[in-house]
Image (tube, rainbow, N blue to C red; front, side, top):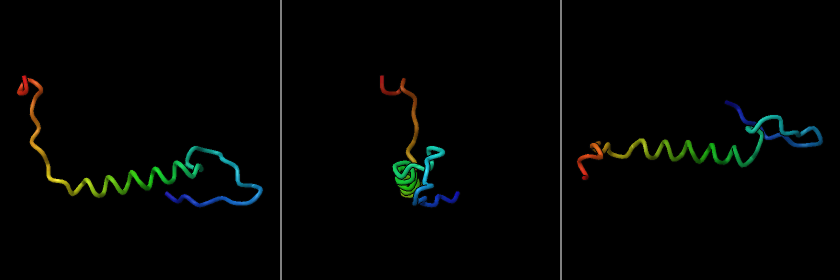
Length: 51
């Protein structure tokens, strides 16, 4: 995906991906995903185990 910054009089928002807020949130989400991917895996258990 290539997200380029549009400037000038023809800089119109055509889709949500043109919004700067979306671009920043997308970069943040990728950064969080990359960092949390390295976290240790936890053992999953059923809700019943906590009753």
